[in-house]
Image (cartoon, rainbow over all chains, first blue to last red):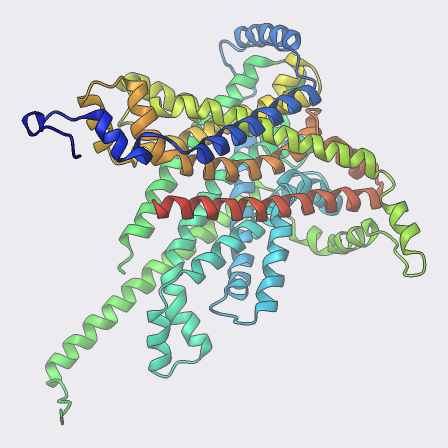
Length: 286
Length: 294
């Protein structure tokens, strides 16, 4: 600054600083306009959606009142003599989730190697496999359940198959990404000491990715316990069957009991599998 | 340079070998134990889930036959006409699909807003009181553990049928899921800018606005996009319980054996989901790139 007097040097001269570094004090018009534009687009779309989807304040208010009544009716949560049934349904739910995840993982493992770029260099193969997995993944569990009910009839078996199908797509994708990001030094070492392609996979890739895959499986098991609770809505077994019926007939005390059971179970599984996951990832010597 | 490889003395070699075989045996034992545990659990789960492999083998033909039946009869000679017959309900379905997308959008937006408001209270480094942090976390846990369809079932009775209910159910579930992810992002920020602002007299809101937001916003947007993708799938089945969207039409088609309708609607849903998947993935990579450029 040419006109800054040396006497008051320590005090910051804001005006001078502003003149010297204008870009630090002022947001550029372009970025401000983009921000306003993006916000306006988001809000505009939201307003349009609300109109289109029949949002009405009156309905929300009266509905909230009814929800309040429901909340009172839910207290106290009680099984009202159906505890044994509920526990059996819960076991069924856990069985569905476990078997579904296991089956999906068993099928996804070989397919994941096919979909990984560093194992199968043919771009056509891994593109096809990936899109196939995407399609399996994009069909919801409930839809898979409806399809499998046509094949094996109503019941938890259809639920397990549905979870296996939906997760096969998701796990296949995640597994193949894990394989692709695996450290390639181990495989190179195997090749250097004379191993073939299969040796490379068995001794170079599998030990590196197995802990990751295990932890992803556990994570999916957790989230599948949640999905398995609703699969009964379409008749594919588990606790969802009771949940749907009891909500329909407004047996809200039992509904609250079921929800509590689900919350406790999920929290327990989260805790156990979180511990297992840490053991898998942390304990494995690298 | 000529280096000779000298073989180990025999007793050292033997010690090494026995240690090696012991280590291998220990790993083997552990693997076998794990596999046995998984197998036992699988059998128990099989009993609980009433797995009947024979039924599956017997009826697997049904699956392929079902797939065959839902596929449309397309002939090259009359492709246009066949296509029009297959997609006879296109205007209605397209409108419903649009409704589904709007439900997912609004559910993500409202849920994301709620998550945004709650996440600072649930983050250990920014929460004002220990007890508030604990309560917010438990509330978020409740929101995301109860499946959205269950919320929808209850809301349908309270608010009446329609897409509004689906949006509310999606929003609540989203608030729980995103709230947890957001608060984890907030817990991982660099606290120095926050301390600097507080030291120079900023209020909590100001500190969040100028010190926290610039660090977390792109991550928030990325998680929001991921959730939108999940919600599109979720909104697709909201119709199963009467909460709007294309699900109702699909349920009717499957239950009433309108075979080609099933494939037509499924194909539309799958195509939409895959497209949104690709688009959001690209957007998210763009956002992550922005984050790394900073």
